[in-house]
Length: 241
Image 1 (cartoon, one colour):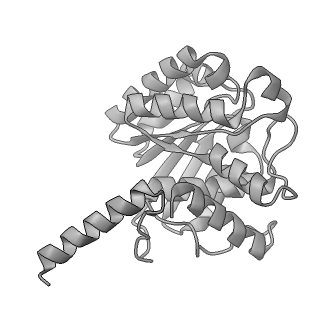
Image 2 (cartoon, rainbow, N blue to C red; image 1 turned 60 degrees about the vertical axis):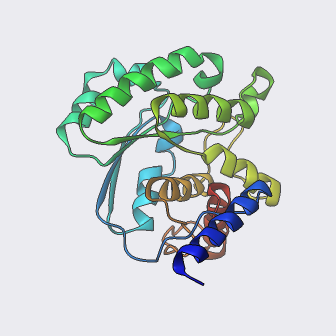
């Protein structure tokens, strides 16, 4: 069989599997990542437990990440604070991760879209790529529609409009809650536990670099190694690996 014929059969097979919901993303070779600089713009959901950026750096030595994440900030608040845009412009970033206040994408999607678009233009002007960090369900706001499904719809809609990647952290939280409900990922007002922050970092790793986080070094000292392995697996499954 020629290489061309083999490739055609492989493509047909994968299309068939996709129609059955069984075709997974290929896992990239386990080579080290090239250097990458990541800026997080968010609030306490990003900042808790020493920050998602800190856990992301622990997943690969070539990642340099930092955050601007005062408690309660919205993207509108950041936009109106010159310091955020100054920090965005003064360094050379590869990725800028935007995390909107946890209720706004549901309560006021127009405002979420407005300031995500404004930041996206600034980010692209610097040569970086925009990534949206999909947050997770808030138990204290479920009655008002702040659910995983509604947040996912809002983030995917804006991500599609901006042609930006969406890190499906909220979907990973939901998957973990279904598989292991005794592992607490967030408090009643939605703030993440160390487990939640680590899971968010694993999802970000896979989203930014198109690689499965499974097998990354277990460096989170406050989380048992077996739990880190489990959370890496949850992130990978959520991303389709």
